[in-house]
Image (cartoon, rainbow, N blue to C red; front, side, top):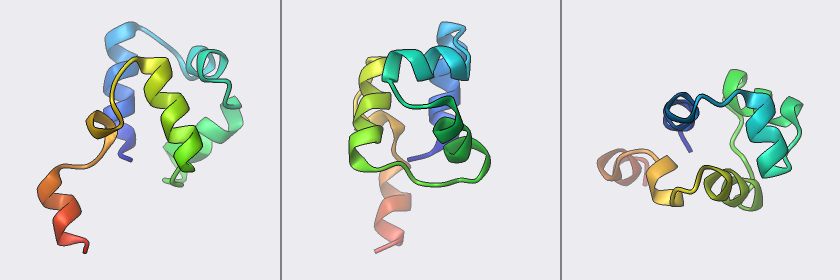
Length: 71
């Protein structure tokens, strides 16, 4: 999951990490780890983030070409 895609969605909505935290029910500290330490969220948390932002998980993933080169 690429944080820049999450950040783009946050900017689009005018949301802070705190608001995403409240809506997704993921602690703000955990979200900061994803953002600043590039930690990957669990599948469960990735789903919570996508649901909170009302987007699909695919929209928050890297490009398909990028995913295929990692295999």
